[in-house]
Image (cartoon, rainbow, N blue to C red):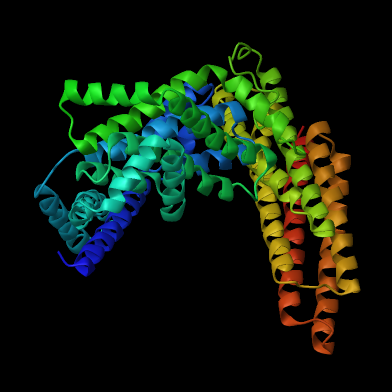
Length: 544
């Protein structure tokens, strides 16, 4: 066969194969939606559960990288501990082997029929769920067609002397095979794809088992670099979680290289007993590596987390996102007033988090230090969690027989939760504006900066006072909030007038003006939320 045809067929098959893996994964993620993140958040209370969740989630979306990135993002915002994350990452390594087993099946011409069905669904149906089904079928079939093209392009090079020399070299020095696997996976950014290529090379007899296995180990190491890169801008804890992925696979590779002859014999024995083809042998080797590696290292997750924390130290600002005051067992449901006190205390806890979040955004505004962003994200995640937990608690206790005064408190707490949640969301708007200011090198004038700082401080004090009004149930504090909010409104009007004057005089450009105006608007909006909170206290206490 002409060399040009060989190269073109190989590259075409590789392109289709890579596209199909991504297309299939994207389709599966669309079907699963945000449920995957919720599963990771809720069902990883210990490393063993974490492993099981990692297997299931990765098996569904066919991407260990996506699962691991989701996991470290949860660590980044404080919703998952390092120990929990390591368990999920171990499970993700097992779950990703599903792709290799799929490739191991020889579906032959049926792949083209499946591709035709998927294509017709994509073409004929416009509803999202049918489009997702079409995408999954087309992606799945594309994997088989692409790998077949890839294999056809490899056949002519089977007798190349260079290839035989490489085989001998990798068999004698497995570490070179590991390095090759790492490089290939880093280049194509997919361990599933690199393992698929390896399966086809072994199926076509281009490489021996003793040469293929070290490359397989390297594929597992190579897939960790995408996650490490993704974690660079995250918290120290998230970076440790990403590095745990690397060390887990690195430890496994070292261990399996030590017992390399035994593992090679095991795969040969397994293929004889189960009558496995070449692709399926690599699939079983991939699965065995990750399952055995997990079973060996799982009991040492605690030590693993401790060592990573000591080796990679960094300033941590972690947030406890669980409820502090609410009873989870419901043993005191017969004392309604006590239940309301606990709910009120939890709302105050939530409000204090919102105040801390606004304080962090002020520090970010003043210093431009991005470390505050991580803390704000943790606080926002904690506020969202408490929003759900506390609302569910209020719904649960609504069946109790409250006095009229307690009923008013119960109702006002619902409203307080909504406004505190809005304060947290508005802080996120502010950090986006500050981030835009930094990335676009927007410079405020001295007057504009002083105005923003004054309004920021006033809003922060006002919101703090509104939370204190909830805590103490004080009309005096609530009235002070309204008085301060009137001052916020006055400043907003005065500052907008000055802002227009600066624009007209040319001392402020349009880009700077937009950022300034949006920041003032968001600060004023938070003042309105503080008024809402104060009014609930005033209305309740005035009707006693």
